[in-house]
Image (cartoon, rainbow, N blue to C red; front, side, top):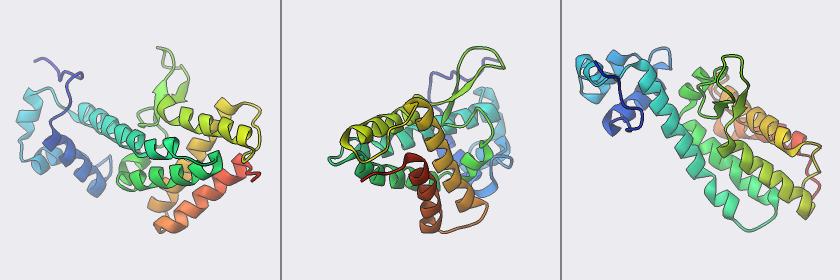
Length: 201
C-alpha cells in the first residue's frame, strides 16, 4: 500500500480533528482512532490513505508553523523602533501558542517541534531553530542596535535563537504546567526576553 503523499496537504477535516484531539488529550493521547472518530472517518479509511500517527503530527506541525509565521508579519512590518515592534511580536506569538499548548508542550524536547529543523542528514546533526522564527528576532535585534533601543549582541544569530526559545518555552510551560493566566505567563516570558535583550531606550 502506498504511503501518504507528504507533498499533498492532509484533508482539512482530518487536520482540524487532530488539533482538537491533541488539545483535549495531549500528543500521547492523539491516537489515529481518536482523530478518525473526531473527523467522522474510520481508522481503515485513514490507513488506506497511508495516514498514520506520524503523518498526522507532521501535518499539525506544518499548520502550527504557518499560523505562527502569519501572526508575526504585522509586527515585523509595523513602524516604530525595534523595541516597540517586539512589543507586538511577542503577544502575537503568545496568542498563537495558546491555541496549541498541548501540542507544543508535547514536542518540547523533540526535533519535531514546529520551531525546529535538523541541520545535516545524520542523527547526531545539530537541531536548529527554524529560520522563519529565529531570523525575525535576529533582524529586530540588529534593528534595535541601530536605533539605540536594544543593546548590541556579541553574536546576534545565537542570541536570537536563545531569546526565541527561552521566551516561547517559558510562556508555554507556565500556561500549561502551572495553569497561569495568559497575562501572568506573558509577563514572565517577557521578563526573560527583556533580561536577555537589555533594552536601552
